[in-house]
Image (cartoon, rainbow, N blue to C red; front, side):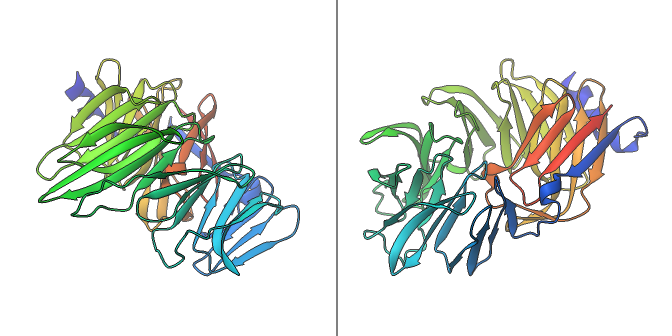
Length: 372
């Protein structure tokens, strides 16, 4: 049956699409945003290499030559690390009101691994060097630091981080640790000061992608090793492995449904959906262009993907593709203009109603509706 589903999907482009359609409408307040401008809750946030600008209901904020910046997932907070006499971290709300500002005396401003992530409550996760993280609360006070260094004498890539929207589930990970001729990796849950748990460690595989779902319930991880299949692992927020699989696809990304029941994987122009309870492949499709992001909505039996040519956060010639697994039908719609994103992990296609969806995390959010 799995092979039959694949064959049917591969022949979709030859079928008449007259009974199926996708309607794409920009969210009106942000339909004119350019590729450097992103929505906030009350205005827009613009970012170029030399300046960030926040325009809300209050005063316009401009910061020159930022070292790092972050826009929270829902657009309620903006964080920036920049020199203002000394190196400092400043948090603004969406209207431009300065909430906190703190000196970062222990940061080396010339370190190109400095990074930050601002949470919806105004808290901050800051990477102050290749493997050290400092956590600030919503009042701007430093609460603790965590070293994520592997201590490998052969070196390691800069540590990454992933978190849900509220910051209740926080993961620090080492994408690649050099140990002689081997490339290793690991991932660690952070619960608080001196309270961490290494839930993934592998001496022969690297981590190419790690994400926490928006509600903080699940963690998805893609690992790779030369000469072997890519592997996907799903964990709960305590680090317990719930599901794993291997695939011959060279994976670009994965996405888990809100209840954890369905896993969408994508690579190049291919997308597949699996039932995590039975490991059954529910469907597979090949598109005309590369899949940038994909997700499955079981309520509607719809696989929805954002496709296009992506480079450095810009998506050229984007199109939205919907596949109805129950009816074995497919439809696609060109967006009509390029899109961009600040952070790939913030891309979402969320269900807003029956056969209705919202593409967010891009410069121009899109309302999407399908008919099959």
